[in-house]
Image (tube, rainbow, N blue to C red; front, top):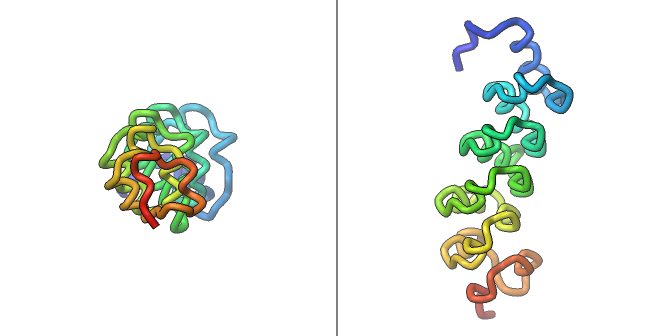
Length: 139
């Protein structure tokens, strides 16, 4: 990432976000719409996605970074744009990172056998509550 054109203020904000400071919540709208700033935030705290500008909540790279932060945070999808929640390829990538992403998938994808199998969900598991009944696996 070329940082040569960044202001000193932006560099400092990204530095703070990169070490885990949860300052995105307090930043001006302009910075919440800055992809570099938001990426620094969501890679440390997937839930920071809730503070991002709406257009970034629909950005595949940003949302997938939120889902994969620190290994797993599928519940960050709660704040993602609806079109991503209904995008089969995106959801396949998301559930591969964290099965909990399935909770926020569009209803038709909760009944998609490949999505469910990719998530590794078996009947009787805690995750089965949000699965489409047509896909529940036999024991």
